[in-house]
Amino acid sequence: MPVMHSSFQVNSVLGLIAFLVLWPFLVICSRLLVSSLRSDPLICWGVGPLGITMLYLSELSTPFIVLGAILPAVISGFILYFGLFSTLPSPLELPHRLLVEIPVITVGVVLTSAFDILNALRDLRHPLWGEARVLRTIQFLRASWASIHFTTFGITFLRDHFDSNPTDLLKAF
Image (cartoon, rainbow, N blue to C red; front, side, top):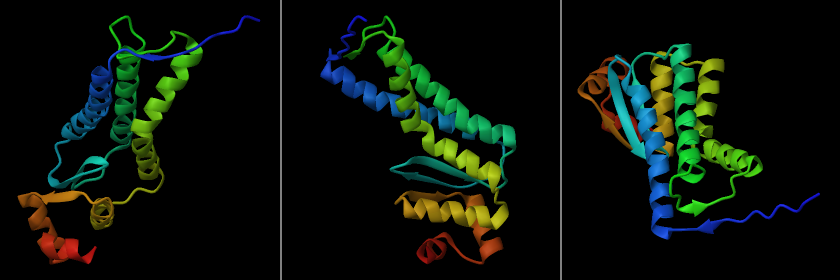
């Protein structure tokens, strides 16, 4: 059995840093693209270390939940494949073997999309509607140190349903 020598080489440190910034940025953009396809009223959005979260009034349909989990994973896989294993100049030189490509792409997709897939499974298995979903999302955003921004509709929603304003509601969490 021949010995397979697999090694990698960094061709460009600056290119590798740019790739490692561009890859998650494009995955986040794909999440925003999926969420922007909705026509429901936006209550609030949060910007934090785990990305951008948008909270809409109505609950998503099952195909939309699945699309929100699958599309960022597919985009992540394409970016990894074309950025590391295509014939284009790559910042990281890896061997073009199936036993290298599959684990690298799988680990990358899991790193960028595991949270989306777990959220989709949770929403499909135990869906929350109405005020409970709003409170759960706000609690999650507060726990992740996200900066929460309410829309005019969201402020009105909080006054009507919770008899509160954003400042008081965020202090409660």
